[in-house]
Image (cartoon, rainbow, N blue to C red):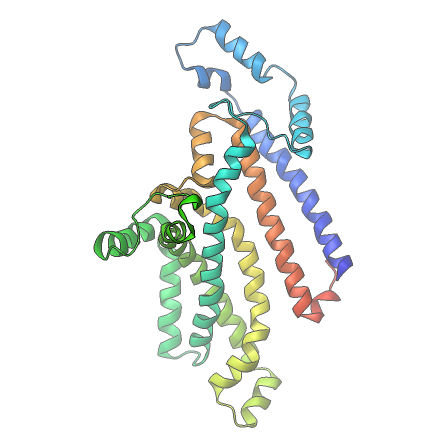
Length: 316
């Protein structure tokens, strides 16, 4: 298992290097003048040239890329062009919102999806199966911002169970902070739950036709009991693999959800960086999001290798 994880970690390092190059080319080599954007249309050419020199925009692209990577390697995330503040604390404060939000959404999807998939797979082809998969398809089709607005109208405006937006900060206590994250986490989790439920249903249905399930039925278990006690655990491997891949989608989806609920997370920070042409914040935050997604996938691989001996013998 150690060799498998070492190969996966090496692959993650190469992926991060490729991602950093793609991010740099997309942001630092884009047409247009970031200094002009920061100063505004009324800025004089001399002022634009002075700011471009101060920001290092007049240096060769290769030198700027190497300087960025070297700074990241030693923990120097640079300074925000728009706010003149260090980037690292800005991203750190944003992650204090985004990471708990993504963790809550992942937990909701990870617990709900296998149960929904099992519910549908117990009677494949029946009305229960068709209705459950139709709801899952609807969950995939509905836009995240629309789900968020419906949740606000129902549970914040109508029932007053949760705040409609804002974040009090963790200094206000875990209770108020988690209460503020409840509706955003549900809005973020619903599409992921719908996708995972379909995967879980297909995996459980595939396991239902195998010999060990028929043996369990022959010993007196009902179909539901055989699937719940035996097939579900084997089907979780495929479900967890997809859940790990979905983490990147959770981070990307947080851009919309955090703005709907007014949460000061990484998604909102990156959107503001795009509006301000704040390249240091945008490139560091994007690369960090890629690294987080890769780290979660690596952790899922480790968990699956630990519980499924068959994966330890597979080539990476």
